[in-house]
Length: 508
Image (tube, rainbow, N blue to C red):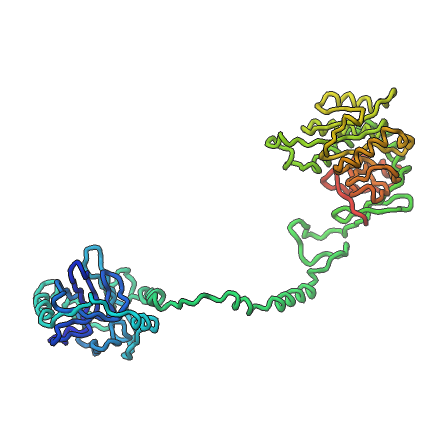
C-alpha cells in the first residue's frame, strides 16, 4: 500500500526544531520506517540537496497536498524521475500566509523520457552533505495518516476534482487569469519558468565582442558613400551643397557673391568675414575723404564719436568677460580699464568709449596730458566723462602699478606725428609695455611706430586700413556711414555686418 503514494506531494511538519518540509514522495521504506522526498522545500525555501529522508519519530504531522494520476506511468521511486520530469504535470510547492501548502501546476512536454537534474544542481548536490536534520518516518505512521486523511471531506473534494481533471486530458488546469487553454500561462512559464540556478555565472566579454567590430571598414564605407554622393564638397561658393542645414534656405536663390565691396584703387591687403565676404582695405587718404563726405551729409563729428564710443565699449565689455564678469553677483570683481588718450580726435573717441564703460560699472582710469588749448570735441567729451565715476589723471605716476584688466590705446594719430617725441608719450608707451595687460587699439594708424604699443586687438572704423602685424587681430565696426556716401567716393559698398555692429576680420 505504501507504493501507492509514491509521487504524491506532501507536507511534513517536524516540529519547531526542524520546521516544515514539502516535496514529492520518492521512496517509503517499511523496514527502516523512513520516507524520502525529492526536490524538497524547507519552510518555503528550496533545499540545496535533491532528496531528503525523514524518520517516523521526527514527524509530528503529515498532510497530502496532491496525489498522482492513476494513468501516470512514471516511476517515482527513481531519484532522477521527479515531478519536474518531461512527462505528466509538474508541481512546485510553497508556503502561504496561513501555513498551508500552495500548489502551482507547471505544464511540461509530453515526452516520457526522463530529464536529469541540471549540472549546476548536480555539482551542488555532490558538494553538500545531508544534514542530521533530514530524518526518516515509518510506513505504518504514514499509512495511518493517509487513511485518516482519505476519510475527511477535504480529501474527498480534492480527490474528486483531481479525478474529473484526469478524465479530461485536454482540459487545462483551473485558470486564474481567464485566458483560454492557459496559453498565456504557458508563455510565462517558457519565459520565466527556468530555474535560477541554471543561469550561467560567467560574465559577458565586452572587450572580445567589441573586437569583432571592424571600425576601420565601417568608416571607410561611410567615406566612400559621402565622396560618391558629394556631401563633402566644400569651398566652392557657387556650388549648392547636397544637404541643407537647419539655418540654410531650401528654396532656389541666386548664387552668393562673396566680393560685394570694390574700391577705386589697387588693394594692398584684403580681409574676409566669418561668412566668407571679402572686405578690401583702403588707404588713409581715401578713409579721410570718406569721413569728410559723410560729415558734409550730416554725419557730424559728434555723431561719429558717439557711434565709435558705443561700438568700442561693446567690444571692450566682451573682452572683459561679458555677462560672466559683469553681473550683480560679481560686484567685488569690478574690472579696471586704463585709457591712454592723446590731444586729438582719436583721443576724443577713446574718451567717449571710457564714458560708456564707466556707465556699465567698469572702473575707468583716463590718462590725458595737460595742454593749454584743447580741441572742442575733447572738451565736450571730458565734460561728459567728468559726470561719471571714472577717474582722470594727467601724470603717469597716478596710473596703477599693478596689472589692469585692459589697456585701451588712443595715443597715435598720423596728423600729429610730432607727439611721439614728447616725454609723456614715451612714458605712456613704457608704462603700457610694462603693465602686461592686453591692449585694444581704437582706429590705429597704418604705419608702425618704432616705440609704439603692440596691440592684441585693433578696431577699424567703416573700412579697414592695411594694418600690419602690430595691430593684432582686426575688428571692424559700423559707424553709420550711408551707402550713397561710399558710392560718392567711388566705393561700391554692400554692408558686411549683417545683424552685428562689430565683426572680426581675417587675413584673406
